[in-house]
Image (cartoon, rainbow, N blue to C red; front, side):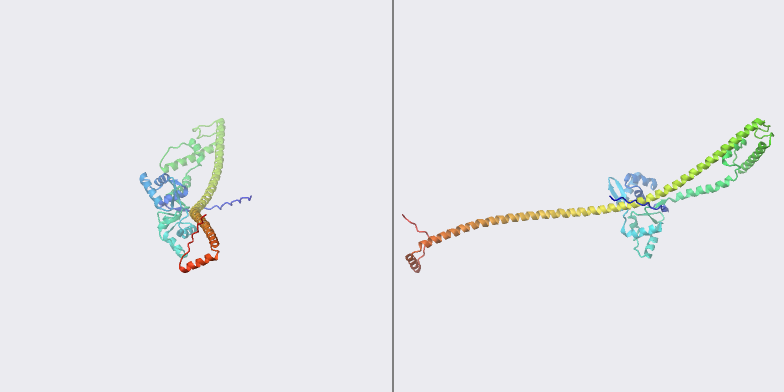
Length: 398
């Protein structure tokens, strides 16, 4: 048995991103059925009410969804309340589909027809053709895109912009801090500050902390002088050693926390890289899914054509069999009639042979009776006199 050939993985391609809102309920149903197919009417109603029509009642949304599904030929009823999206599309829209696929961006119908006119291809007669095609989506601004593209709400782009502004203002605010964030607890214990809403007071307080920290550092390094940590009193040598040890332990703990933070940042960077790889793989799988859906719809269409052809052939075969049976019955009837005629002919032939045999016998008898010449002479005379001869047999009397 031949070995199956390995399918080469598709190259990683970025999915086309389009910023814009969907125009109508029909476009939302198209995108929903493309991403999750098949879908029941209740699921489509819930999605429409959540994403497009939050202020309308469920009954009204369901009425609109049913009207869109039944009126638009790009939706196919799978039975039992489930619906699917037709991706075979209209043949007249194939040039527009190839144009959008090549451009990789949403375009207005006028721009699409202009490009098609320049390339010598047939134009799209109207937007209704694209509405009835499951491969196209319409945006609020009048642009048309393809169903397998990724669509983002314009409001989603504002949130990353706000986050970027916060990131840019964070370093400027960090310049006013005298120490790193990790050492804040240590300096707060040494120099507790009162909370103030005035920026000038805050800056003065931080300057005071910096001056106190510098003085404390000098005292710890020079000898048994007045210590700010001990409330202005002279620190004994034993307590100073213990305090230095505690300070060294704190610095070591801070250093360990820094290293741990660096390790966590490295792990976070790896996770981000893994996330990007998974996103690329997801994009590739989505592209393969789109291709498989198109192939599945093509196979379904082919199966439908084959089933229709099979039904036609079955009807032709049934008609041929019925005609053959009728012809066979007619031939049997003709055969029976011919057999009846043949039997009748045979019976008539037998009767004829019997009649001929009787005539032969009568002829022999007449020859025997008329063999004498006197009789012949008498008969001749009788015929001359106009007398007739009776063919009755003479009766012999004993």
